[in-house]
Length: 284
Image (tube, rainbow, N blue to C red; front, side):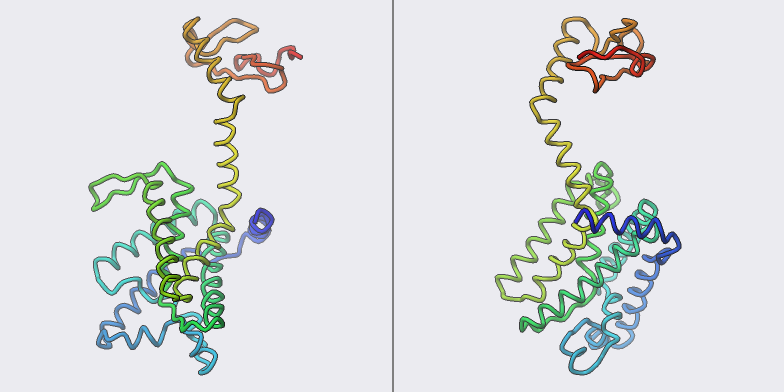
């Protein structure tokens, strides 16, 4: 996955004009238009059924428009739920586009659509009467992406109650798992595969990030890191400071604005201030 992720980054770097600016604006607008047409046509579900991704109808009836129109089927036909969900995904999509750039965000969303189509046809090939109504799990994967990149951010439930994004992300993962297990239990392979392909798309883009975070966490809990932190605490208790430059003798207690670093080329733990970190004899 690292190679695929790197290939995506290289492609975006070489083709800076690639992508659909404000992609989520078109997705949200399409959802609103389909919802309005759904209400105008009697809200009996016939229109949404006609727009859904139904492999059987595509293969047998050549209804190729379904490969595109299912993207715009709204998550809910309840007005309040629809407004809140579209606002959330519009906001998150724009944040991700600003963070990644238009090209990478476009690839992320379009690959989510592509994986959904492939997953639907795979389930159909296995004999499941699958019919996909919207990009519910793909949009939920946007929330997971946002939570990984901004884990310390807060979401205000009912615009009043602050909840940390990373805790909501775990609920999101639990919902994915519940959807998969429930569908497997019911032998509904079509609905089982949709959350899986959405998570696969997420994994392609975030495996390197999560892998680096895991390595950092392992280092923080390693014997070397634990011993280093213990040495720093003991030094502070004994001498009243955290860091002391071995060259000039200044400490963080006497000079709180001074930056201190530990040299990676010296054996053991040797601290230097910002004026001597690059100008000192190394201990070997």
